Image (tube, rainbow, N blue to C red; front, side):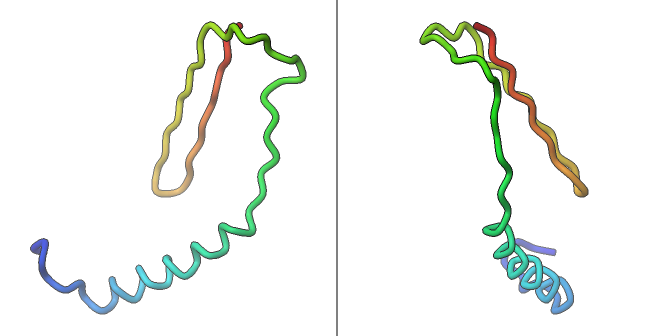
Length: 65
């Protein structure tokens, strides 16, 4: 498929359905709390790792004080 070609109708239909489903993400609420300890202003290192696949995604954040 070339860059400027129109997408096949089944692919376009699937994409539009997926795009419409993205509206549901507005309802998603994930409470976050990274620690019970209050940090001082001298955070030494912030390390972030994330990865994703077609089925899932994940992220981890580590804070060094």
